[in-house]
Length: 110
Image (tube, rainbow, N blue to C red; front, side, top):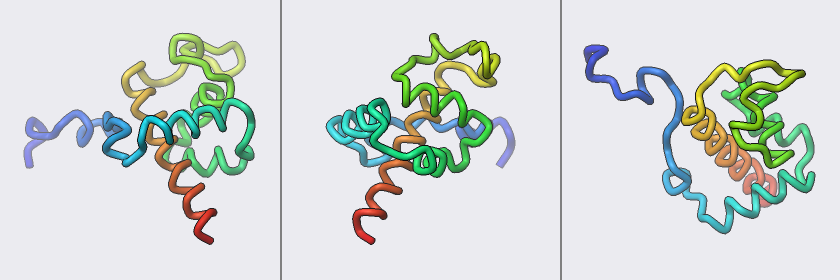
């Protein structure tokens, strides 16, 4: 396949899938989001959910634990500037929630 035929996702690797593609309902997303914000999940679990997202893990963790939007973490005094744009960030954050959902479901079934 020529490079011109690749979609943005295949070419650059940033997921642009919605929660529906990850089989996460709105209610489940809210449950996961709120659980992260109140500290329900350990740092180890959150780090595991960043599998494949290590290059932006600090910003993802900051966003989900402090309920901060891209605009509020685009530049952080400790972390510096986030290395991706807004749309890619939210795509990766949805991937994080998918990974977290899979981890939690595996723990419940074990």
